[in-house]
Length: 182
Length: 356
Image (cartoon, rainbow over all chains, first blue to last red; front, side, top):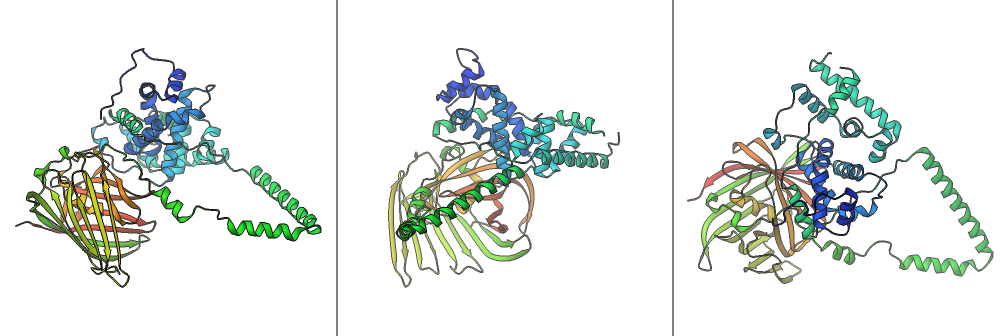
C-alpha cells in the first residue's frame, strides 16, 4: 500500500476543524482523526463484536464512510461521543447480520494475559447472548445511559434495564460457579 | 460478588489495540473509491407510537370513505376508470432488466489485491486430492452430496511451462450430471491461460482463453434447444495481479499452497466469468482472510489448519465460505458453505495421492 498515515505538518488541529476538513475530502484530516479516535473506537467495536477481525472491519467501515457521514454531525455535541455512537451502531448492525461471533481468536495468543479473574469475566461476558451482551457493553463498560443504550439498540428504556439486570445476574451466577463467592 | 464489584470489574476489562496497518487500509480503501453509509438512529416503537399510527390510519380511511361517497354523487365512474387504468400501467418495482443492470456493477475488493510476485510457487506439488461432500439440512439431516477430485500436474501450454489443473465433480443428486474441467495455468504467474469445462450431461461446454490483458469466453448448449454465447473483455487490472476463472473457490483452493497465509493475512483477487455464470459478468472480487487456527479431523487425517474466510460476490449477492487449510502443506482440508439459511454443504478431504 502506498498510502501512509503521517501526522499533519501543521501540528494537531482541533477535532471540529479536522472533521470539517475530512468532510471536505482531506485525506490528511481523515488520517489525523483516525490517529485521535481510531484505537478507542476499535475497543468499543471489539467489546461489542467480541472479535478482533470484526472490530477492525467496523472501524474500517466507520472511517471509510466518515467524510459522508459527517454531514449528519452537528457540532454542538462532542465529536468523540458522536463517533462512538456511530461505531456502536455499525458494530450492532454487524451483529444483527449474524456474522461470526467470538470464537478462537488468533491474536489472543500474542496479547498479554489479563488477570485470571478478568479473564474469567471476559469469558463470561462473551458467553452472554448478543442482546444481553450489547446492553452490558454499552451501559456498564462504555458508560452510556439507559436512554442512549435503548436508542442505539432500538429497544425501550425498560427493556434495557431488564436486560442489564438479567445480564448481571447471569454473570454473577457464572462467576460464582467458578468460585468467586466474595 | 456484589453488583457494584461486578460493575467495577467490567470497566477494567482489557481490550486490544487495532493492528498497525488498519489506518493505512482505511485510507487505501478511500483512495480506491470504497464508500460506506453507517446506519442511522433507530427509533424504539412504543405503545404511544402504535396508538398514534392507528389514529392516523383511521383518519385516512374515514376521509377516503367520505370522498368516495361524494365522488359517487358526481362523475365518479370516469375517475375510477382512470385510476384503474393508471394502476394497471404502473409497476411499483424495478423491471427485471433494470434490476439486473443495477446488480451488474460489482463491489470493490475489500483487501489488497493478491500479486503474482507474492506467491510462493515452490510450494505447489503434483497430486490428486479427493473430497467427500455432504449436505446438511436444518442441522439435522445429513445426506451425501457426491465426490469431487482435483488433479494438479506439470504440463506445457503454447510451448511454455504450465500447470494443468483438472477437476471432476460427481454429484449424487444433481440433475445436471457430473461436472469436469481442465485449466492450463502459467507456471510463473499461476494466471489461467485456457480453460474448458462441461456439465449438464456434457451438453454444455464453456471455453475460456486468456492473454496477459484480455479474456474471451464461449458458452454452447448442444441439447434440444441449441444456444451459443460469445464475449470478450480487456482485463481491468494489471498483469501483476493474480486472478482465477469460472467457479473460483476450487481453483483458488488448489493453488492455496502458494499463498503466504499467516495470522492476520488478508487478500482479494478477481474472478473472471463472462457469460457462463449467473450473477457474475466480467470480473467480480473475492475476499479472503485468515480468521483463526483450528485442529480439524477429516477422513484423510487430522490437520493443524488456518481457518480462512472466503467471501464471493455474485452481483450484489454475497456467499461466505469457511475453508480450513493445512498449515504445513497448504492443502484445503475442509470447506463449509451455507447455501441457503438452512442448508450447509460440507466438503472434506478424503485422500491425497502424490503425482507421478
